[in-house]
Length: 248
Image (tube, rainbow, N blue to C red; front, side, top):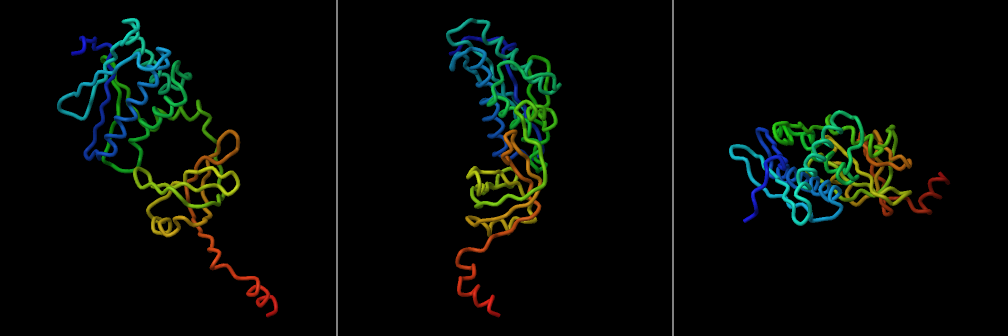
C-alpha cells in the first residue's frame, strides 16, 4: 500500500460531453499521462523519480494523478505539480515558454487541448484541475504552443507525391510523401472527397490547398481543396503512340 499523499500534489483530468467515444477517452488519458510524465522528468532531472498514483472521481469521466516521490526530496512532488500548473497558465495567457516543458511536453499539451476540436460534437470539455482551480483546455487555449515551437507560415499551393498512411480516426487525413524531400506531409480532407481519396491510395497524386510550412521552408501540412490522381505508367501513352499523334 502506498503511503498517503497530499491532495496538493494532485493533478485532475476531467472530460465531459454527451457522446465521448472510447477512442477520444483513451487518447485523452494517454496524452495526459505522457504530458505530466515528461514535465516530472524534466523537473527531477531523471525518469522515474515521480510515481503518479491514480484515483477515479465518481460520477463523471475524470481521474486524479497524485505525485508521490520515489527516492528524492519529499518536496519534489509538490514542486512538479506547481511547475505544471504554472506552465498551463503561461500557455493560456501567452506570456512565455513555461519552464521544464520540453518540445515533446508542449506537443502533448497541444494534442490534449486540440481533442475538443476534432470535428464531432461528442466531447464538450477537457480541463485540468489543481487544488481548487481548473484550467479549460481547448484549441484556443493551447494555440500559443504553435508560436513557441515555430509553427509554419501558410500559403496556398500544390504538393505532389504518393498517397499513403490513410487515417480515419479524428480528423480525416493521410500522408503524402513529397516527391522532392521524401518526407511525409499530413493532408487533411473533408467527407466530400472521401471516395476520391480511397480510390487514390498507393497512387501518385497532386493536392492543392492551404499549406503550412516549417521555419526551414519545408511543408508541414495541407488543408486539401482539390485532389488529382496522376495516370499510372500503363495508362501513359507509349513513344509510338506519341509519334502517331504528332504525325496526325
